[in-house]
Image 1 (cartoon, helix red, strand yellow):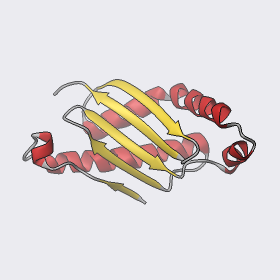
Image 2 (cartoon, one colour):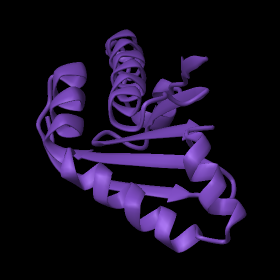
Image 3 (cartoon, rainbow, N blue to C red):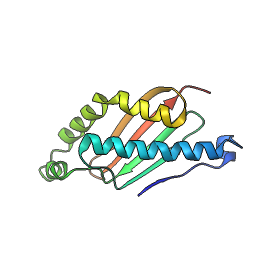
Image 4 (cartoon, rainbow, N blue to C red):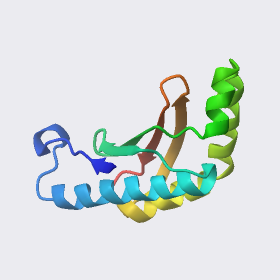
Length: 131
């Protein structure tokens, strides 16, 4: 399930553009699910994208681990799994940036990626250039 939530206009200081922001968040979630499928062989079960202020997009993705990665967890290889995930994420950083730039119509200034392998939740954070 891919869904998106949007802070209220009062939280973001953004009035009429709320519909555009909601559409952008939906596009971000779909694009990141697609990239996860391409990169890891399977997509997350859920993806939720949010604006955290006017210039930051956060996407939380759950249930992303592959069967082999789950086996690594069973073997106690959490750190190795984190390292492998980060290697893959940053190896295709340009694809992640391009997807968010296309979805939002804004340049990505910074990209950060993280994963909690024990809870199987990943987080992709994009700081956008100011409008």
